[in-house]
View 1: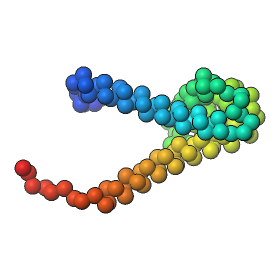
View 2: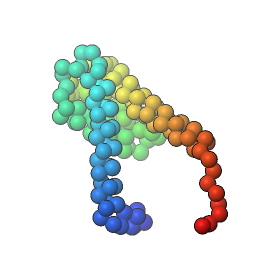
View 3: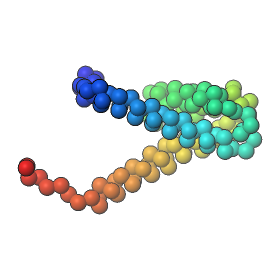
View 4: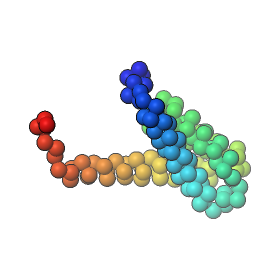
Length: 130
């Protein structure tokens, strides 16, 4: 942990790290919220504050010590949807699984594959010191 704090030693680096972290969380929330809003039958039942509550529930589910948040994420997110939007448990489970697939599989695995392909196609750096 101390090494991590030393790596952002200058105020410029620290502010960059904070702004980047906030931007990442905002993007995760927007992905989550827009997918939820896109579901028919729920779009008029949930506003951004309720979406933030459900997103927080899903974040708690991801932090529990289970592999990939699988199981805990779905339970917490579904519970948040049932409590805030008043939808059925089955519909909440359907939405939760779809959001999980979008966020985890498409974004993480998809961007990971793009980065891996980029690394394969990038010309190698020379090892000579200049």
